[in-house]
Image (tube, rainbow, N blue to C red):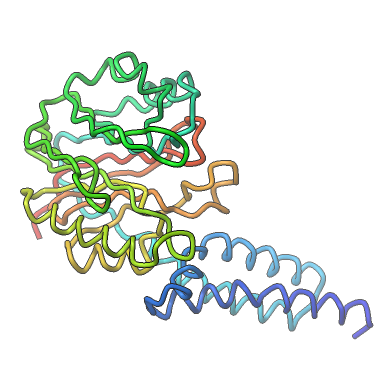
Length: 315
């Protein structure tokens, strides 16, 4: 092997270190905060590994290609947990649901309006509705007369609120009173029957925030969910992918199933394959996801997530 090819092989192997560490962290199931941070980034790590595989094969760097292929396999196995089955749906009516973190400082009301209008959803669930769109809430939600609008809270980026809006009546409206509480929940009277809805916005993970914050908020989510009837949809910005420790906690404690997580939702400026899916929609087993897609940009650093829901076939 020539010195140049030796250097290229070395660089390729060096570049595989971080992706392999991320893949192993995700597969380990370890809930320690440092391991959990790594486990969030399986999607971009998978992309990096795929690029190194392609480059190594093109340059005939066989050792590097073999190592990259092994890394890619580990990452595919790690990422696979983020693409669960949507379930087997019954024939009949469906409900289209739109979730969006609009980013509290986002003042692009026109983009928000376009995104909501294009989605043509039956139910809208939103967090971080900032001051500018809040001032035009009647116009933005003109097609959604039934609403559960959470209290305005002060954040680092300005005042904002969370809400649920529906074409159909909402009952059992509940609003968070503690910082860890889900901000808003309600029961929608839909063509597939009553469906409980919970909007969630978890804090960022440690080291950026209090290290037990996400876990405490997820416990509060379980407390809220226990008071509501099934079927149930929980939508939110979890600041965590569904296969990491928070997703495992939600599945274990609530029996909920995440919508497939690709392409990712954050950060919106990156291509879909390089994003991570921290904006999740979870369903109870008596519902099924017919499809999942991303909504049009809103001016936020998150892309909206849209799902179509039906009743699940009996087991």
